[in-house]
Length: 439
Image (tube, rainbow, N blue to C red; front, side, top):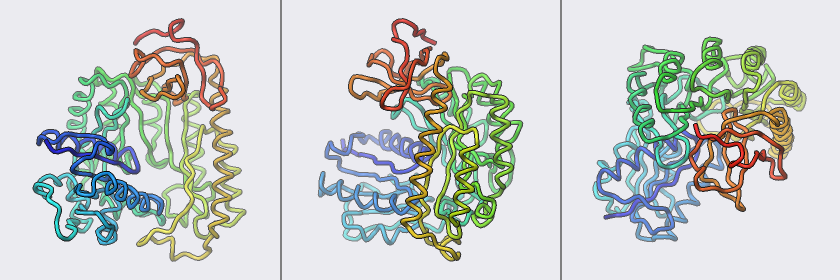
């Protein structure tokens, strides 16, 4: 039995796809192992959101070579679609597969025999028109369920449409079938994921369903305790979605909503499809219906043309906004996007300083949100995340908690009282045996 190992860079969508591809290998008789267990085949699923993600790919290939110099190394994912030739020149890479090929790699790389020259199997992105069903299972406490792929938006900083193709989705019926399979495996939480999840419903180039249709249907699936929406564009997060999730059976009070800039001039230059007034309206609507809702925000700093005053406009907007944490991205130039051609390049040092300011603000926002939740009762899904005798998990509204390690609690939903914020920035709870009830 040949051994295969997987390494995933990037987003929840990549994790769902890696997990599905690993099951394809298992069905063909391969044994899935860790990188350190001297596999015969290494599959590296790449990201290309930032330059750093590209560099990580080369580092992981070197590590694979160190572990098994004779191992077969195949690269898939967004970086593989965008820069297949560049990857093919990395020493040790045997094959590069694009977006249209990655789910057929067992068929295309027949036998995984090391070639004399690197095989590049990457069609143009317009060939990536099929929706490949995917979900992660047995990898983590949560399951990432892919419901949508690709993007029809062309933001000035983003390579994702070039890496994943046009927006396309599975049908609600197929997704419900996957959700029932997941429920049968006793997974407690499902995260709906995609590239532009709010644009769900396009099949064969035509809109046939809506994201709110999926939300309402999957809320009825028995056997799943919690459903989380991974990330949704503010212009696609409708009042109907917010109102339904606020009173739903299974959707948790947690949204992650990309902003990218709190300055309208910058939003227009970025080619975003909303202004900050709409964003603020979305936040206010959520908090009106779900006061304890956790709201995460993506922000890019140092976009071309962003002056210091523009950045302060973003900073002050976020400071006043009732949000819970930030994901801060330092703008990096990406080939074949519009932004690098724009005037007003921000020096790298200035970009890093702005990132630091927003990361400090994010920590303040998170601690304030945690403080607001102290003394309340919440349900925690405990994970196999053990550190110094303590285990961790998340409440329904995404407060990270700590408790004394108990193997019986892993992948269990327990009712707790949030007690205090500890020195590590997580929330301590009452002793499990005193207040925990199994759901």
